Length: 247
Length: 81
Image 1 (cartoon, rainbow over the protein chains, first blue to last red):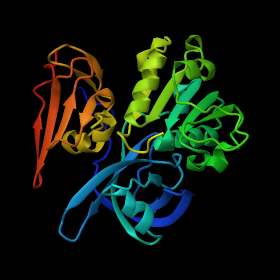
Image 2: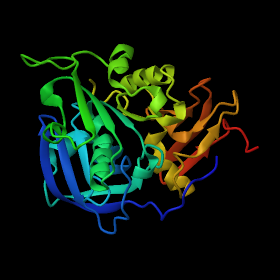
Image 3: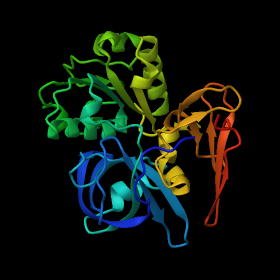
């Protein structure tokens, strides 16, 4: 293996929680003050480490929800059988300390120079790093066209809905609600498959750049469809969350 | 247990190699498939972390943390050519 761009050492450090915001019934956005934060790229993540009184340690990765230049924020979905997320969503308060290291990742990242058009595919809480990309695009005044296809179980499970319902110029947001739709819903109401992507995705001929993030099954399904639709594999970036946060 | 991908071990690899390795290219020692580390299949629920080739399922890397040591096995990767 060959290494890529060098950066400073990655060390565990203590961050201070500055705010906890309710996104949905089970999702919180936690804003952090991280001393000496070197800055991050849109799409990167941090590792969070919790240590209990007996010294038992649990580590998890969380995507950074904020754009480069904004305070570090993570958005966490509570998994009822989780070791880490219930503490983050239910117990953590402004003023608390949290141990983390980051930023991490050089693959699932986007910079304006990478261009587009962008196809962002989110399954559940997989929208988090894509939201960082959207905010980064807006803050850098990039005019790259974007389509975000966001699969969620219900409308109440849509994270960042206030923001996504008022997208920036050049950004289209398409929801599909896979489990329950409110009365009068005219949007999509099925899982993301080849037929849905044929309607929503950019044609391969315009050389789109795709980012798919969500549960493993969602990411596998959409990335296979895109590659069969003649998207070059190297222009389909993927990040899998395992079984967490299903759609 | 569904596989994660190489993004999930970005921090662990940084700890070992002192640089981001998720966009580095790995080559499978069994089938020769080349891809970025972020794209590999990663199982974190084994005793330790097991990284497999997505083409042939061969084990490429294994990481086991024992106390404050990390044991690293990279024998499934092709030697740099």
